[in-house]
Amino acid sequence: MNDMEKAVLDMIERRYKKKYTGGIEVKQLMSGGYKLVLDLGNPDKRTIQISADYNAEDFLKYIEQELIERQL
Image 1 (cartoon, rainbow, N blue to C red):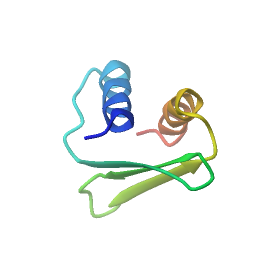
Image 2: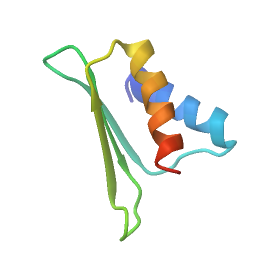
Image 3: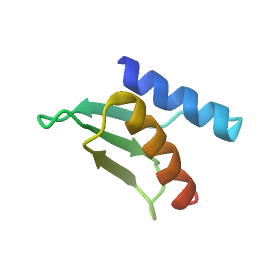
Image 4: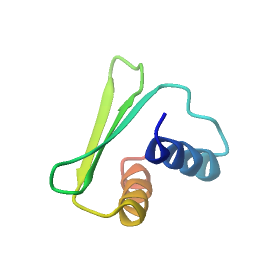
């Protein structure tokens, strides 16, 4: 697990007061941004992919806002 994956998991636990146990992958893009892939294991919402050209700190803020807006 890389540092960004750990940071996303920590943010999810802090926000929802629960541990996320599904698949997670965060990759740095060639553009310098990041891509998050969450495997929800749900037939209706199998995976979520979120990409943005932000630095690490801003990407984590963006992910939190996206999860709120997507009601996850």
